[in-house]
Image (tube, rainbow, N blue to C red; front, top):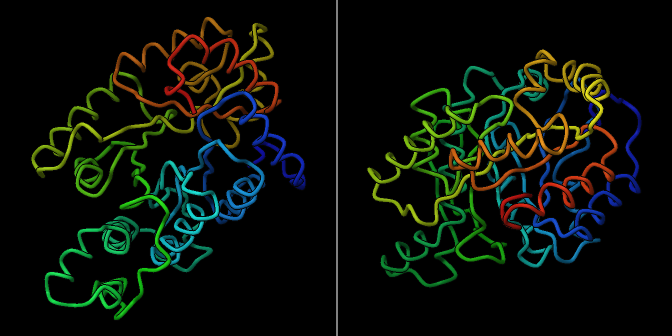
Length: 324
């Protein structure tokens, strides 16, 4: 999206950013998702497809894709297609129900149903992607072609004899990360039960709260008898603008990000990557010590210049696997 700018996007703008990130050695690039918003917003899956076509190494992901308003069957097909078209570079299928009422109103889905629908949508995607379903069906004596057909009878989603093809390149599937602000116990349980990782929102959580919620998720994960070693996390929506000029930094937060998110510029500057290189490194260190494994930097202006500054002056001081 173009924060604070409703001008027309261009192919050159998007693809030059992706190619610059790949050239700088960034590990991955992800897209966010809205149907309607108060800023200009390209469709996330279409954008990711275009980036997949011109890049060869950088991994791709969604952070997050709203599988409720888009429908989980459609999303599983779209994400599988991205993994196929990128030769297995979908590093994360980041999914969630979103928090923007306008998306739901535009799609005719009650906003208050989003969490129940989301839980069911996660069950659908897991059924379509998880290899355990193959094993269960084959144990019932069905042949391999029949085992690709699945049934689901939920409250919101129903289908019979649905083919699981095309399957993603990665086996059993690309990692499913669940976006959650960590504000509810039910949400944390959902992440632990259905996800391969947690995507936290940088502007909605502090480092202390992240550590607290991460420990809770891991505890629930253990209770569910699920693997802890491979379970991952990522700090998404880490907006920022890196500059030694504090006045310029404040203007960026106040004029661009604050109106878009409806948060005070002061709060956003303190939580996110606004400030000098030194300031940003300190903020990153605090999250690193809290257990954050990945940080996805989201520059709000001067995109190519900002990711170059970040890569050369900040990311180079940490593990290459820490930044996306």
